[in-house]
Length: 277
View 1 (cartoon, rainbow, N blue to C red):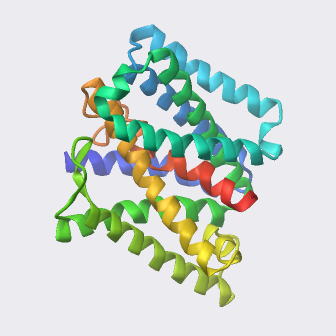
View 2: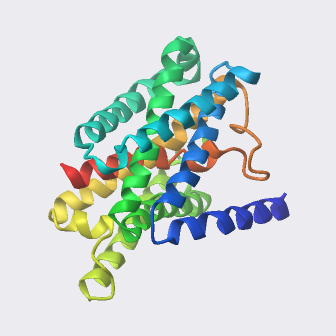
């Protein structure tokens, strides 16, 4: 299993890194579009659509994003959309996590399905526009989510006692969540120091937030870290409701695309919201 995970991760990096570091945004936009279309297929399956119907929904999401790209969506300001998407994630987190897996499955699929597809589409748009802002900015958003996850894992393993959401994701603890936040704040502090020392380009999320003042910067990091946990918990809730362990088997050893990007889905549009308010 470990060997399979490593091989899959290396193959993903071999495809992702050239697109990510390419001077123009088009390769990364195209690759991330394919990933989100696959996530749309997984979302359809998790919400009761199977076979050709799920494939059509995933393909439809991909075509809708491609059409938006062709119509110039990447070159427009979406300040109100980020505010709407961020608000939707906050409301969804409160309502869905309070209702649990049983409550989620009681909602009509006609509501669950389009809401999820809308949020996936917004995540793609936010991801590509973040790359347009700059590689440093996009990487700083990615690393916030990755640091929160890694620090939470090790902190939870070492100190975890109190369960964060036992009915949704039994492996998560409050101690792990606090460790994740601590790791993010430490990384942000180092990044801001590097930028202020002239070694960075000051285009990262952390330097932009720091420019708003220390209080707002720390509050924003707390919010984004919490929402990265929420993204993970909501996907776990949906999978538990559907009775599956992984969103799919597209990525051997890792599960599906949603399993890899769940924490990024709320953080990307919220990061865009914070820097455009």
